[in-house]
Image (cartoon, rainbow over all chains, first blue to last red):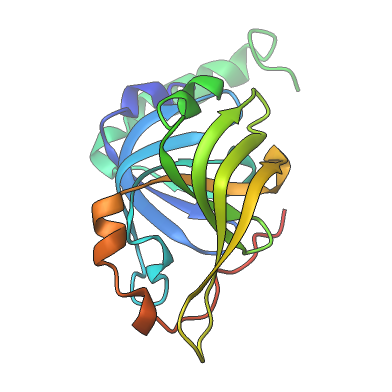
Length: 95
Length: 96
């Protein structure tokens, strides 16, 4: 679980009410609270309310998805980690 | 979380509540649950039939649970924004 390596990458955060905000990832904490810089609401025409906001803090509890830039995600590494976890469910995973 | 809000203290902020209301004010303080204190608070009431209205409501203590987003308000952009002609539906509430 290292979204931390995505700091500095552009991500799109979709809230549970469908509002989507794109920005550069600044930080994430254990609650999935997210800080974004240089933000833009994806549908600005419909949601111009925040056009004077350039950076923001999003509460983790309202986040539905975080869309990551595909090239920044190492799928091979993820698959490998998932496979290894399945073989040794005792290490780390509590299920 | 507390560290994430530190940089906004004493700055003008835009707060989007989970019920869809929007407030602007000065961030006076916060804690680890993202409860915040806003000073010089104004509620911004958006409507699709009339211009945005600003209602002064003083000092507000807001429970973290009810906050969806806190943004730093860029005062220059905020002054340029044409709120008098911005007739839009209020932001949607966020169901938790």
